[in-house]
Every structure is written in structure tokens, then in C-alpha cells.
Image (tube, rainbow, N blue to C red; front, top):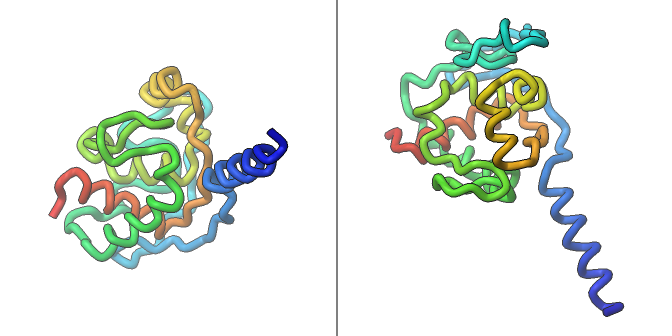
Length: 164
């Protein structure tokens, strides 16, 4: 029994580390090389909330998904494997959080980027996210994704949903 303590401590430490902790960098470039606006929506009520956009600096003017970028998707897969697979599967199967299959058909790319770069404000006001929280019972932690990583993950999600 004494030999299990160090193993348990190690497993718990790895689990905690895998759920975040990276510092967020300020890389604001998108696939088109434009700079994203740094303004955010500071709505505290769901009445002001736009469910197509979410809360944050991303919108249809600074997230261009008109062309699929396989190199960006490959980088997104790498980021996903490090920061997301502890809680999400690329199928529709729930792990800790919901599966990713079909997410890009249900949400806009800029909504996804707003959510994955700063999930807490959106969880507080988005009715669909609140329903997911009731199912999953765990709030998505802020993974400290920088803007480029968030865009790469969206491109990987698009590939997972069949974009070519």
C-alpha cells in the first residue's frame, strides 16, 4: 500500500498539469495575417449575448475560414493532443467534455475561438454551454491557448468534420 502513494501523487500531478497552466501569449495573427481586434464584449447578461459570436475579440471579420489549410490543421492536431485529449474525443463520444464531431457545423469558427481562448465568461451566459455543463459536470478550464493555437485547433476541428 505504501508503494501506491508515490504512484497516485504522480498520476494526480500529471492530470493537473495536462489541464492547463501554459501562459497565454499575445500572438494575434490569423490565417490571413491580419491582426485581431483586442476589444472584448463585457456582457454580464444573456440578453446582450450573441450566440453566433460568443464573447471575445473574434468575429467574422478576423477569422477567415473560406479556405481549408491542411498545414494549420496538422499543427492544430498537435496542440489538441497536448491540451485537449485529456477531456475530449474527436468523435461524438463524451469523455470528460463533449466529443468534437460536428462542432464546426453547430458553431461558427469565431464562436469556437472565443470559447476556447476564454471559456469562463461564455459558460456564464451561453444557454447551450450551461446545458453542456449540466451533462459534463465540469467547467472547461482555460488552457492558455494563444491566438495561433486557437486558430489551428479550429482548423483541425474543421478537418475532423470533413473540410478539405
